Length: 270
Ligand SMILES: NC(=O)c1ccc[n+]([C@@H]2O[C@H](COP(=O)([O-])OP(=O)(O)OC[C@H]3O[C@@H](n4cnc5c(N)ncnc54)[C@H](OP(=O)(O)O)[C@@H]3O)[C@@H](O)[C@H]2O)c1
Image 1 (tube, rainbow, N blue to C red):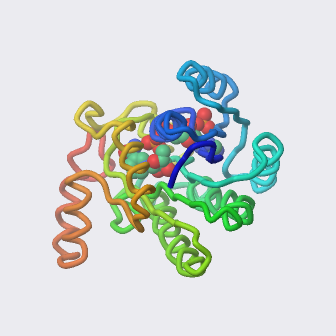
Image 2: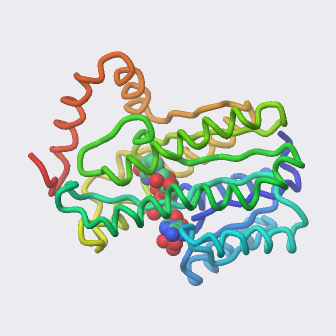
């Protein structure tokens, strides 16, 4: 796909993978619309993109709010005329044993990660179908393999994968490309902002962020997968191995995943 002047919406693009996607898609010639919940972060990101010579605009949109998603699509149509590509990237993580997890937190994670994806896709889809464009879902390795103390996050990402598999098949005769991206551990703010059982934020990452794939590497892989019209993109060597082993020896993987996650700093289980 030639991205010159294509209109690309990236939800949750004021940090991490979303901001990196905004930069690389913009550098490839696309017109970029970004969202987030903080005006300060939105303005900073737009300034960074403008300095790169990228045509961009953006607006506040809480992914969990259907009305704000409908307005986002209207605002983009008003500014750029139409929508070619939607990157459903906005997301939050959580970390707590299910027994300690307030159900309000479970709902919040589903509302942002899953329902946010459904709302944005719903309100952008007519334009994307008309333009034979693309819908991208930034899911996770947790979209096909659960980890302990991440029940809500895992459920939200499994739900995303199911939604997109169904939608992809539904749209297959209409020329729309549906890509599901499953990043592995990627350096970003996701673990600092992860919700604990009571809804407060974790504040500090329990993992060594320096040893992870960078958000820029993930964004470059997403662009390449879009150009190749790939169906799925599973990232990191660890993620690819998890995908393979979980298919063939899921029981063994329960053990491996438990032991691996128990070693995290301040793990709620041992
Ligand atoms: N980093 C990883 O290891 C990893 C691995 C697999 C998958 N992923 C997925 O990658 C996506 C991007 O995450 P990231 O790692 O880049 O994390 P990040 O640095 O924390 O970025 C998340 C972005 O989403 C925005 N956001 C959060 N809640 C939102 C809401 N309710 N409405 C709109 N925007 C919201 C944040 O901005 P505000 O908070 O200002 O709104 C921020 O711009 C997520 O879907 C995540 O699940 C990440």
